[in-house]
Amino acid sequence: MNWAIVTLTKGGTRQAKRVKKSLDNIRIDIYTLKKWSDKETLTIDKKLSEFVGSIFYEYDIILFIMAAGIVERSIAKYLVSKTTDPGIIVMDEKGQFVISLISGHLGGANDAACLLADRVGGQAVITTSSDVRGLIAVDTLAEKLNCRVSDMLNAKDVTALIVNDELVGIKSDIRIDIKLPDNIVESAKGKGMIYITNKVLDISSSNEVQLIPKNIIIGIGCKRGIPKEAIISAVAEALNSLNIDVRSIKHFATVDLKKNEAGIFEAARYYDAEVKIVSREEIKTVEKNFSCSEFVKKTIGVGGVCEPCAMLTASGGHFLMTKKSYNGITLSVWEEI
Image (cartoon, rainbow, N blue to C red; front, side):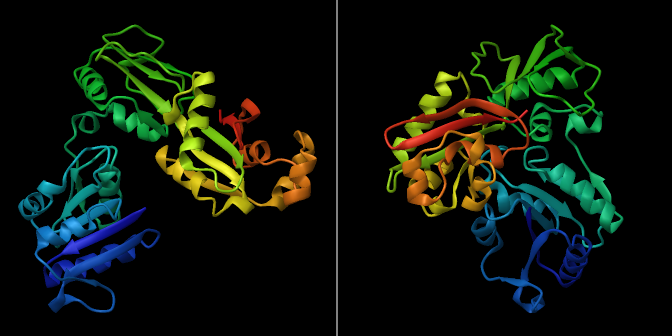
């Protein structure tokens, strides 16, 4: 996680350095005015509102050490959505109060504010209703379970039911290792419903929401120069045949020879997934467990790519689809459980 600290005063700059020292396990850049800048800081060289725009999407968390009103006016025109905005925190120069201002749940501002307050001896100020009352918002539940939210408007409606003490049912295909509020009951029928599954669902009510676990790994091999469109189409076809939601893709996995294959990386970006690279030496340790192509082995030194790469980059689970060819592309689909 990357943080930026933005301040405009001498005292704020001193406090920023203390914060950075107290959070030594986090990458932090400090920005201040030129007259307070030194080798430990970077310089704000334009109007604050313009400067904020230049860094707004470069960091996961932005901590402002200044008045909340200044921050609100500076960030207003850059706010887009709680699903994409960074977490915004405001703190006074003495570190007495640490306020979670924007993106408390999905953006991580609530957790970051609590962490920072603990480190500097201040008071975290959290105003989201679910947190204040010891409940849990749908988007927070999604974050804790490493899921995507199918529909943020539905999530808002279901969260409203939770904070208003209505009974909400939950049905999950994955293990839930966190404590749920008393009014979220597994398999119960309530005024709202939360479904946790990577399957394609047809949600018809605004009081229902799906959380999609990011637990699908796409093992992939391909001929050189395959365009991203072909890979995107092949992946969609494979997952559609399994009734798996494409938003459940966690990562793509391929062999080291494909580390510069543009089509794979562009397709992964399209699906908002990363690419993991597996060395041929690693593949050799498990390739006896998979089908082997003598042509592929003669060409690259191992007899298969998509199956061993998927398995080797997974944390347990099983294949939903073993190797299948799609016009110069081979895919496997692995589900972590």
